Length: 228
Ligand SMILES: Nc1ncnc2c1ncn2[C@@H]1O[C@H](COP(=O)(O)OP(=O)(O)O)[C@@H](O)[C@H]1O
Ligand SMILES: [Mg+2]
Image (cartoon, rainbow, N blue to C red; front, side, top):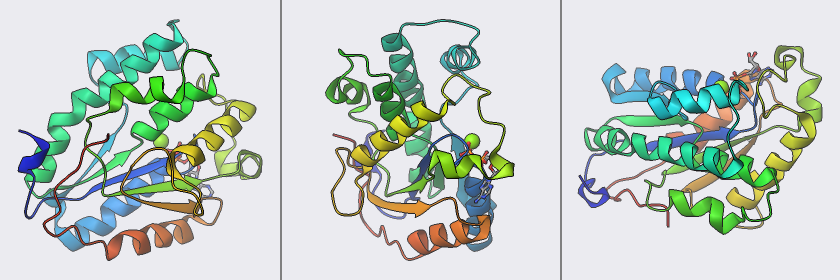
């Protein structure tokens, strides 16, 4: 199936992005519940990215929990390969009229690798493997200031995985803004309609902002585009 086949009453592709502990998984679940009430349970699905259930996903998992070492380039490409593994199921869901909520996607892949500041891993290099993947209709960036988030007890267990160190998170945050834009400036990456939400607000307030960003979105006859 090609991306061009997805015309008509397709599902919507929604991406939730943000730093570790921004509240992505929590908000994906809340959004799932709201959307299923509106559309029905078979019309909505949440997919975590990376998908740790595949062989590539397992290699990524063991890297993230620091059980294995891999060159920065290799892990970057594995993350991208993992998104490519998901491509067909993303397109099938949308074609079947199922709205898909992705818990992270391409922006995370690029923002984290860039934050390592490996000279040969430029923005262009990091982006190249993902070109051609389905482009979301809407990307919600749950923006947290890592220093403010640390003060919230619910998010206190920072540091379990390799990337959860505060100054690294600050670099990732800056990269997210470069990729997704910051309101005044467009981002380097085309990710559909981009909405940035202050995710240090109360859970319900964040959920409300997400709902406002999504509820009136009309995809109509719009075909799913690819990231290019
Ligand atoms: N708006 C919020 N305010 C305070 N704590 C929150 C908020 N959203 C999520 N949390 C808490 O922060 C932790 C991380 O949330 P989670 O959804 O797993 O983040 P992520 O998936 O982005 O890493 C959880 O304990 C969650 O209950
Ligand atoms: Mg999560």
